[in-house]
Amino acid sequence: MPRRITCAILLTFLSEQPRPPMISGTFIRVAFIAVGFYSTPAFAGMQAIDGFAIDRTEVTVGQFRAFVAETNFVTKAEKNGGGLVYEAGWTQKPGWTWKTPFGTVAKDDEPAVHVTFDEAAAFCKWAGKRLPTDEEWRRAAYTETRADAPPPFRAGVTYEFPTGHEPFGANCLKDCGETPAIDYSARLSRGIGHAPAGSTKAGVNGLYDMGANVWEWTEDGGNKEKGTRGGSWWYGSFRMKMEDRATKPRNMAVVYIGFRCAKDI
Image 1 (cartoon, rainbow, N blue to C red):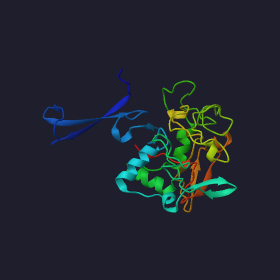
Image 2: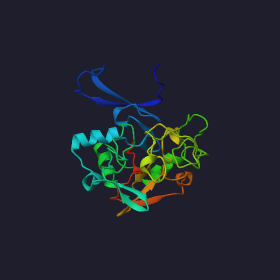
Image 3: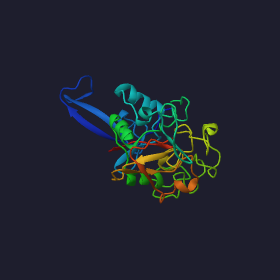
Image 4: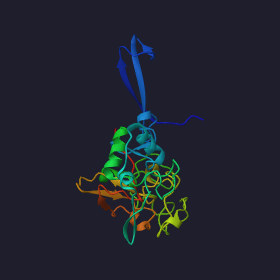
């Protein structure tokens, strides 16, 4: 069954374009820009907000793998022999990288973590995107912009959590209900671990894991410190709220910090 898409048609008139339709001797290339959901390749998997689009899910191991394969990129965690986790203070874990976030090989649908702010920005640039600003991230996470939002969401409403009025359905520590988290608890002193990207309850604007799962880097204008939003599997639901914002050194690679990308429209 074809998917119904409300769209505007952008007509670009080209005089020398091969194999297009022809109208009165003028070639026309038609690009369909979906309102709310983008069907064009440049916006695949993204959700339109106001003036920008944002990834529906956190960037995955599989996506980051494609970036590495094309660019030969090596992350800081790989160079240093492993990323960080908080135990009795920050602890380096040998062999914990984006490929092996808890010391074992991750599946392609797991969120890419142990990635610094600048490494996340490099991925987004490679993908033709950028990291979202803090303000963009907040708008996307808490205020519903879809005119035809499915219940229980309503257009124009700002919610307490990215999942709505309640935190249930997110992958947080203890008070979000059951989640599809992968059980890495045997390797951790706290919590279970992250869930596959896009496997939890869809939230405001149809986005996944804006609350909990992994913190997400944002561009907030800082220099040495950069913003992270949304909380993670390591924290309870209180870290999912709009007023909660953390910062980390931009060169820090941590087991519960990932990212998603944005793009101007």
